[in-house]
Length: 134
Length: 334
Image (cartoon, rainbow over all chains, first blue to last red; front, side, top):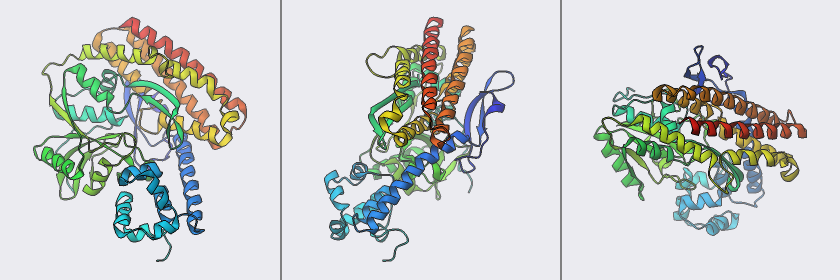
């Protein structure tokens, strides 16, 4: 790739620049700061769309009373049971149980704090969906 | 906010080579990023459905996290110190202690929790590397070499990023050079790095890695839509392209970085043949970029016919041939 062929496509970098290696007019490698590449935007959006769709599906389950708010916040942090278990020091089995609304509603304050800390939320935020009351 | 001390930050293609380069530059050994990448034999290829990230097969265009730092340091005779911690408080105290001595320190961190990353790039990925070089009331001053400028990061965010769990958990890892030889054998390290890269790409038996990994992917990929369904096949293609371009490879899954390394090696070793191989690596990199473009068309839904996957397969098969020849010639040249 030549330096003047490095894409400058305002894509996913939100104004930041990416260092790309390319050949200058003399055929020497130089670092060229790139605003992004359309290709990156497409594949990045594809990945983030998948995350968004997954999160929306979980949100609907929470609204329908089939999953706890914990399931929503876990998914929103791009975590699964395994990763949330690792971040809280709990077993995967227990985390999975706490995704049930009835079980989650009866959790102790200490357990809620543990989840809240691992997810970077307050306990109040953890107990509800964003934008929902109480 | 003024930066508490001067740090020789340099915008880099990749986080690990950028971090390693910055740490050593701060201590007086100023070498280029491509040189660090080559001496650390960073180039690789792996694609396997046996390992999954977010439910998708793992694709890697480079060796395991920290392997570049370890290999390059060993080959130059630099003694590195690595410290991991069970307890976040202890890790923070140790970092502050080293910073107060005026040392710059390499850190491993999870991208998701770093607030200065663009929101679009904040994925759960634990293998990111950056330098901490100062502390003031606002937080830690970081040289994150994939960005243009140094940044200041709040302490809570950095601690969280250093203690994220899961695959490649950093466990508070910090590292820094303990001793640096006055006259490191750069030429020797270049030769060792090239030999090791050739081994990684050509000689590893049984596993779908290196050139054989590229060839195997080329064989399999044309069956993906039938085997996994259109949506999942698309997601897997997107993942390959992201690993190649998005995560900071200098372009074309490190192939341009490696081409720059070979060009510098040609001069330093006075082996003119390496210059031709550098040009061939650039041409190979351009071919990987073409692959990314076709992949993006598939993801966008602009191409849904089987011919698109057939084209990916042809590109990969061609790349496997060309890279095999490249690394055989490289081995002969060195």
